[in-house]
Each structure stands twice: as structure tokens, then as C-alpha cells.
Image (cartoon, rainbow, N blue to C red; front, side, top):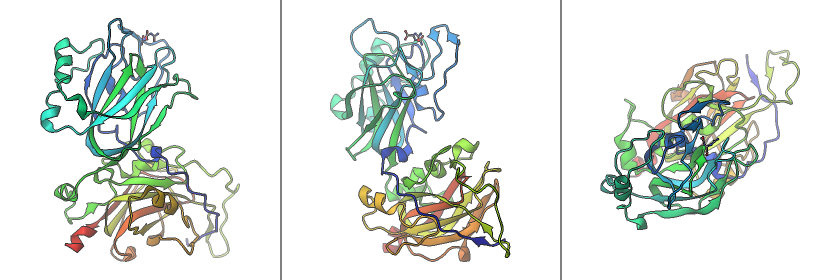
Length: 403
Ligand SMILES: NC(=O)NC(NC(N)=O)C(=O)[O-]
């Protein structure tokens, strides 16, 4: 069956907000917390939405899905230290207080540091057990980290209670330095359900090349762990496109990018006399590659998308000189998305519109890919809607060509 594109007016690019970026809490670890009395700090980093369990109590009190400390009866305040999986630039945070209504932390501040392994070793081994608090001795050890190492990214800020309209508590960050650790300070105590750390991994090209997983010598130029991140999208109703660039196997639909069904779609689908199916729209997501390079293979994986895989997809690339300029990225992300080619669009087709199958990794290389030279950004468009599990852009960093 042939594909017959219909023209749809491209949606405008959503504003370039930090919440579109990777959630760096995935893969991060709690190294220390002053107090885990009601619920352990590890809950802050879970990649699932916070839950409420009506009527469930544990020996310490009400079961809560977050990090909740006891009501302080001594001086001081609670804090925890988080180790990021990779050195990263942080663009913003979300302190999600879901379900903490009478016990949320009234104020937080957030700091970050770039700690050497010997500085990290000053932090005592974590126990992380509900009902316990750090000993005075462990507190002293942590305080040996020079306080000058901690840069305040978010000054003391009041939080909203954990009701659906006030729980999000988004906080932007201007500083673009590279960090290895984050410190969340509660003033003075209480609970937060999730701390989402939005940003991008920053690794040297040498480090990226030293971990080439693929026999062919290609690296995934787009992978989150190599520095790729989302710069714009049309829809993320059930799953965010940042999931496409995560490492590892897809467990279920929540690990992928999934859009809503198109509510304005026709009541019945029709084929014309030549057997062409009328499509009725598209959705797109654009990314900056972690490393600019030439692409040799593209994997489009629909794993676990069985009744909701897209009918077809296409992949485009472009090369932008100032490839980390946030304003430029915001401007190019949605240009000419869908079927239309705008005159001023920098995007070139890498993989022309191709039909997809359910629950399958599709590999495209050789003559299925257009030769468009080195690129710094990638955009995937799906027709008309649905979801993808993973997108892998295998290639050779352009720096290799230059040296
Ligand atoms: N009902 C409560 O939530 N009480 C306490 N918290 C827990 N988790 O029991 C508290 O005082 O913050």
C-alpha cells in the first residue's frame, strides 16, 4: 500500500522549556541523607509518578511515596546528597510534592558541586533505612566537604502543597556549569515526592569514544548518556520523547514516546482508487545530538507498541553551527514539520517516510538512508500518531573526520 501524504498545518514549536530535557534523576543515586524517618530519600529519584495508598500505615507512620523526614525537635535542617550518573549541565528542577498535603517541606534550596572521587569519599556509606537518621559522627564526616564546593542553583524557595494544581514546583537554573552532585536542602523538615533534575549529560569526546558498544565502531550520537537531548516536540501525552534516547531495554509503553490519539481524526479511514491510505496528521520530536557526526545506521524501535505503533515515520537531520545556542534550537525545532517543506527549513531527509510494524526494531542503513553529511540535530516524525520505544542514531563523530 502506498503512502499519500496530506498537508497539515505545522503546529508551532512549544517554548523551549527545561522540562523537555532529560530527567537526570534516572540513574542518579542517593549518597547521604540526614533523616529517612517516614520514607527513604531514594523515593525522590523513582521514574514512576508518586502514589497514594489510602489507609496504608508502616510502623513509623503513614506510608508515603517520597522522601519524608521526622518533625524536627532539634536545631538544624534536613538535606540529602545525590550523585548524578554522569557529569551534567542542569537546566532546572521539579520538586513534586504530590500527596504531601500537611507534611510537605515548606522551603527548599538546591545546590550542586563538582566533587572529585576523594571528596566524594568523605561521604559515609549510605544506610538508607526507613526509621533512621544519620549519626552525629556521619554528619561530621559530610561537613568535611568544603562548603565552598556547593554552588546554590535555587535559592530558598517556598513549595506548594501536594494537590494536583500546586504540587509541581518548577525551578529554572541559569548557571550552565558541569556538575557531578546535587544537594537538596529542606527548611526545616518534611517531605517531597519526587525531585526531577532536568538537563543534559556533558562528556568529553574521548570518554564517549572509549565506550563504543557497537562492533561496527559506530556510536549512538543521540543517546542521553552521550549528551543528546530533546529540543522540541509536538505532543507528549502518554510518554515524553526523551524516553527514546534512554539506555536499556523497553519494559512497557511508559519507557517510550507516546502521543494522544488525534481527536479530530476522521470517523472512518479511507483508501483512494489506487489503494493509498489517507493520513490525517503527524507528530514530531526534535533533538540535539550529543556529538555532531555522520550517520550510518538508524534504529527505529516500536517494542511494546502493538496497537498504537505509528503507521509510518520519517527521520530528518540538520547541521547548525552554533549547535548549543538555545534560542536557535528553539527556532529550528518545528520548522517545516510534517509533510511540508518550508523554504527556510534547515532539515534534510535522512530516512524518507517509511511504514512501520508493531513491536519491532527497524534497522535502516546503506541505501535506505540519504547522504546528508554531518549533522548536529535530528527530528523524527510519526504519521499520524502513536508511539516509539527507542530511536538510535549510529554514526561517526565529525571530529574524527577533521583530525
Ligand atoms: N499523617 C501524617 O502524614 N503524619 C506524619 N507523616 C507520616 N508519614 O506519617 C507527619 O507528621 O508528617
